[in-house]
Length: 142
Length: 142
DNA sequence: ATTATTACTTGCAAAATGCAAGTAGAATGT
DNA sequence: ACATTCTACTTGCATTTTGCAAGTAATAAT
Image (cartoon, rainbow over all chains, first blue to last red; front, side, top):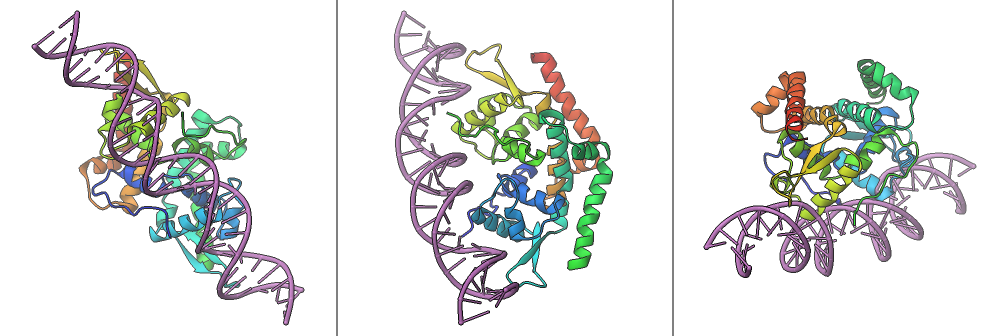
């Protein structure tokens, strides 16, 4: 069974509404893997350095699917696999993700990183490129 | 005792780092109250519609203080009260908050709201005005 | 036919949360 | 002065969520 509650509260503020969706330890990690790492498979998500456990991963993929933030298709070569991908709603989170990255870099970051430097100095280009990567996968696979 | 873990993992990605800080159900609610509602007192945070419980609120205020995202002073008229306020790090979260609001509005929102319309149509002005409100409280009280 | 992959489930211990009640100190009322 | 009320927390305990390890069922590979 799913361990998350469905959204019941009426006329919530958008922040509270967002927290119903992404207000936990794992959801944004999964979205990060899909958005920036180009991952699509259950097994690939498990390889993320944060070591998400299989039950939580299964639960969050189910939740994100039911919310329409991700969707999936059967793997064309392997029936045991699903290919998860970000819907437009999921892709729309990129601006949130980028602002989070910039905030951490500006105020909390320790180690400097050339990847972050690039995001910082070419933010709109980075966003467009990321969207384009996602889109070209979609065109090839959906 | 605090119920949160301190940040141990080395060279984490910024998203994971952010989740250590704001990856729970309540932290951003508290920040929302401070940032947009101009609240500063423990008792005021308790009045938020999400009904945070006192132990969680105390825990998160402690955590946010220890991370330097908020700070507090004694209430000048009442020694039983503290006045919590956002530091620069906390104020820096405004861009994240606004992107979250815009994402929810664009993809998940149900009821239209004039406040959100304003944020959407005058985003930079809204951000500046919010920062100015915070700053003028600080000048008066710190 | 056997073994290995793969996505997911299950069971259980540990941690986080939610609720209600308590506490200590300062403010307020009489 | 004394009792009452406020206020920010703390505590105890039940419930929920998480984390870990071990399955399982279906497909794929050998």
